[in-house]
Image (cartoon, rainbow, N blue to C red; front, top):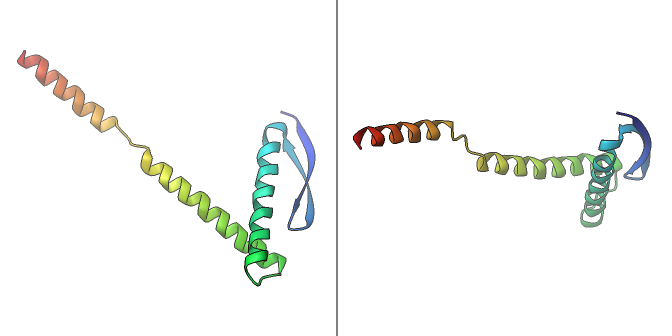
Length: 97
């Protein structure tokens, strides 16, 4: 897969990156999310230091993502054991008939 050169801006600084074409949109969207978080924190809290804003934004975004991950993991159910029990029940019922 070919790499393309892009430039993203995060908190007022520009970063040149080489990414695959498949990753381009995800990287651009991630940069947008970071910038939105930085802008929100800058407007609502008395923090102006770029490093502090980036650290706080990173923490906020990763906590949000982690919460989604944990929620998603809870929704996934390993039904292997349930399927075994159902098959056993089915066999028992068939033997009674």
